[in-house]
Length: 335
Ligand code: DGY
Image 1 (cartoon, rainbow, N blue to C red):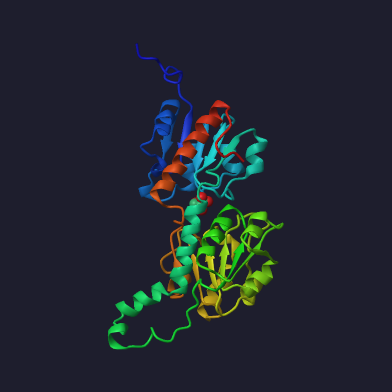
Image 2 (image 1 turned 180 degrees about the vertical axis):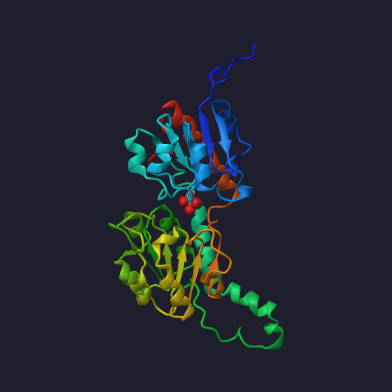
């Protein structure tokens, strides 16, 4: 005789998943479906609007959210007292008011550090695309300029990763994975900022320096720290003005870490060599934004963690976090 699930005979608690493409054909999702009455929003319709999110959250016991939807006091008030567990389909959690969530006894998790290698790989990809001028090269061909002239390839001002000084802003898991890959490109020096000296940095021969020194000395600046109240606008107009004309800024963390207007100006005036941005303000970035007009800026749509394998992993962790958190067991990555 088929064993009845303990969840199938009672009315199920509600789980809101803010975009439907988080679901995967994986056993963890069968368990979720069995445990919860799931509501979601089609990713094909764009981002879930705030009012729809708040409406759907009402009466939910569990929530899987993403970085563009704030989980703040207003959202928690709307959800009601039955909300027991939240997990974000992301490593970043600047969109969640963790103190407020925890003060209500709600369990909260993320996908933890599963993204480090994949995002590090993307950091290197962006750095090479910007420094070796992939975008300009393509435009050189599509404009017919290459067919018309011989100029452009022989004498260049390009600085590659080999022998460059690289700076890592925040030597966390992603910063460290990036530094490890950079070693293979035979960079000459790795500088980093951190609240304290990191043994992993020392092991790589990296040097802890103040942020201004890192900005002034690096040919490549990788921003890999989390966005918090303390790091908002960390790379400001002053830091950008200290950068060398050879400097390339790579940001795959959060747009709010950089003074974006100052960056646009420095790129436009060619005060720095270029930028590779996977994150920006706002997201989605409108197609006519000043950043899009800049040939020395490579833009990607917040996709540094978007490989099939990693997305599957993130989905499983999110599902497991909800299942375990709801049952009162330790989540895979809990804040
Ligand atoms: C994260 O996981 O925080 C990435 O930025 C994707 O949102």
